[in-house]
Length: 252
Image (cartoon, rainbow, N blue to C red):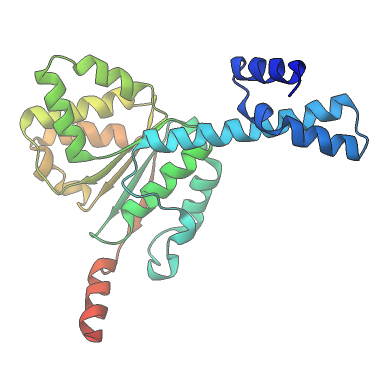
């Protein structure tokens, strides 16, 4: 390897251009073969670098979002869930405009009807659109809020949440919260209002949210903020997990 090549590799590493470093020899050989000039050589390398950089950025956003399992819209069975507004879901996933408008999405329905799948698919698509996303169960977030409040680091977590473009709160309604926990959750929703889009999945009708939040006044205030600019998706029917269990029992 000659001195120029060694220096070039050193400079590409210093400039943090890994795709340039990996591909410059093969692209140079291809350009020599089809007699392309130097601008074309640089253009081809720059295009590869940009594509790889965006892919790495998307992968990082997906990791940071902390999805329990990555699910996409392609694997969602709309035929088994006719109550779900397929056209609206595809519009929300495809454009991501709801995040630009700081709108929320509420997914309401029985357990096991695909609400988490749809919420994950929406979050996954948002990562691909360059958005900062975090996925968490509502209970896990409330527990974390209580812990950092006790440790006097609540402000740090609040700032992290405020930097998001989309916060997904899964499974609201399974566990009732303490008065302090409900107030901390309300504070998250209040801070997100017209700043950060929220996706909330719940098995409870709105009139029953007091069962988990404890206070009618706090519940009303939270719903007022969540539903001001909102898309509501209903997922009804029998639980797909229950259906699978029945099938397995019939087979055995």
